[in-house]
Length: 362
Image (cartoon, rainbow, N blue to C red; front, side):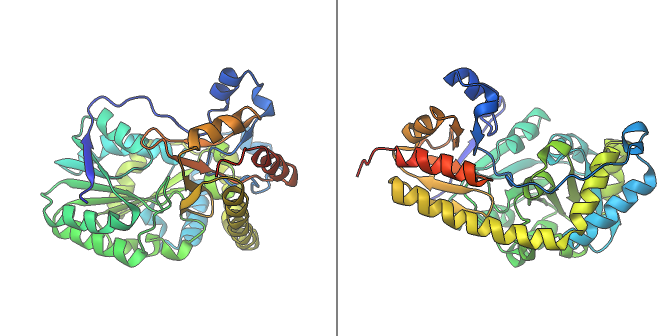
């Protein structure tokens, strides 16, 4: 079946995860009482130790930004810091790149492999580009991207979230590299959003970026390290593009405390390995709890969230919300639901008890 394609020039408001304040108003339960399972953020964050007072008192130094770049390069496997630009969150990059790219590319059209993170389409639309969303099954996404690039004219931009949010679909690194070569041959461009790649670092194309001059790779710090509030995102691409975008972002974009925390986290390989193991086990545990106590079926996953299918999704979300547990429904398909992972034993028990109360509808 051919993928559905939609085009939008007036983006509708996006239903994001993490909207505890809205849930609190809707259900009359104070925000501080909610268990938020609506995001794909690690619920057991990297420990934030004491931050030197000077980090709060002065502007960040150029030498500190350089040290952050070195630490990020080591973590992401990037061959040289010249291929890396940092920004205050991946969202800031998603909003900036559609405007900035006009300095380098005469964009003829933007094609987004969906369903996926809605801000990509919203931000490219806002910048005035012709934006097409291709609703594809996870196992068809690679072939459809190849098809688009085979007929692409100069200035075509293809956007793929890999692993995809919300269905967890993963295109292997070697296939992304092949897409990148096709994009280069067509004088087109490939943007790969690897926000959820930290649990599968061997599938990242960051280490190959020197051979992918028409590819931009987005990386998110906050999800895997569980520190979305410090706002740090990176883009990996050709050095001339890094220089240009860094100038557009401007000085002092990354606060000193953020740099200190991120450098510690990037270097802590023991914590990273232990966290990957824990998240993998938590995903399997969540599958057991959800699929033995509801009629939902697993239809996609990463080690930061689970994506289930079933006719009772809206009713189950409401059932959990009345117990102050927030999960994620989707406007594109009301028969899908996404769960993040509980963090503490109390949080797990709270979810399990709520699922135990769900009536047997078999």
